[in-house]
Length: 490
Ligand code: SAH
Image 1 (cartoon, rainbow, N blue to C red):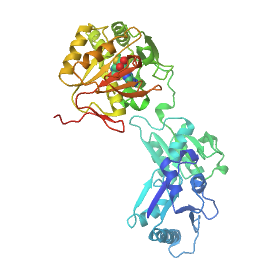
Image 2 (tube, protein in one colour):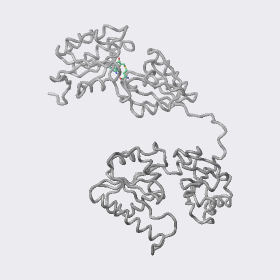
Image 3 (cartoon, rainbow, N blue to C red):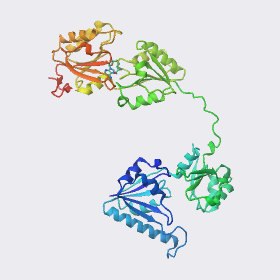
Image 4 (cartoon, helix red, strand yellow):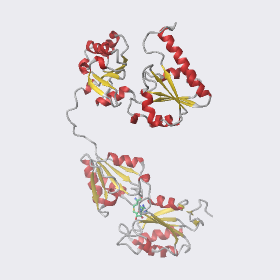
């Protein structure tokens, strides 16, 4: 049981919020106000979201003009009406039903809903869902800024006395005058009196389909409906900016980790760094993972020219570009971050930052369970940047220390023997049944993950897109194929 005051926006059914649409569809009771003669605009906006079988409550105003035989006069008749409406809605709420009161625009902005709110909100759980107001819609339709910087927007009902309107229009920067119709001539005279008529616009049925826009001074007063308003937009935008000025961005280099593959493994921070970049620099296949943006320059390079690529990025940044140097996985793990930071010593004026990414070892591990759950080490098998003797010595040390190993760069087209050499070396310290995980292109389109043993590790199944995880003496494989390394060590 709950009462909702739901704003529907100015008319276009696509300007109904997602929340409003959902609540309308879920409600037991849909209530809406309407004039004695009129049909409800709010209901027609809500109609696409309503469903078969909902109870509807039409709350029809007893009168729309100031003639009544009620002893309390016009206001007395209205008060009775609101009391009766509130009682009708309360009956539904008491019966445990959800009641949505529809409101054109925003419910708390000159809306009839607020009369229900004042009478029911302290008695029942109540929520108000804001909506796009006619003021916002009118500015949008005109395509003119409404207020900027410290400008003041004044919202006025056209029912105010003429002198009051004039005084307020003189004192404000921007203004919206609502509730036109029979008030129109008076409102227009107030604009003229305030010296603002030449800048004022008339907007009728904004976003509703039969929309109409005209300079206020040209409007024929006879045809003005209730759903219209007069608008003074931001005075500083009366003159439009002459041209797009040259941008003076401050250059910088972000070394961005793209993650192992796939958008879910791209962090929001990395996404932001890509989205602000003017230039994308990196190894071709990694640059290809960034959707092309015609505003951005793409610099695809060969994989082997890291230092050159880093200098190029820093030069671009020095000339004012915002450069994203992209790496797969984490840029600090056998990737571009160190190359850029090394070169950046010659570019002390260029800011460099590192944006982390999910590294391949974590991604591969997660696919099989938790093989990296205890101490582990990370080693690149590539002997392009360090001699094989160093690799071999580190493998040996890790094996002796009973660490789990995550092996990056296990093979490539030109490096083919390292996997077999590693396997044989490790077999001197580890049991043949030691679990081995081969993750290939994890997170990407060609993902495969295999669990095997050290003795059966087949170098033919390993290429440069693979990462190997070699278990320690405590790493286990369950009958279901899950691999994990317990945190407790015997
Ligand atoms: N900076 C990257 C590593 C670059 S070195 C990172 O943090 O992941 C390149 C090596 O990373 C590859 O040879 C492979 O061993 C590993 N690798 C990168 N992405 C991978 C993926 N999606 N699946 C399996 N291994 C991957």
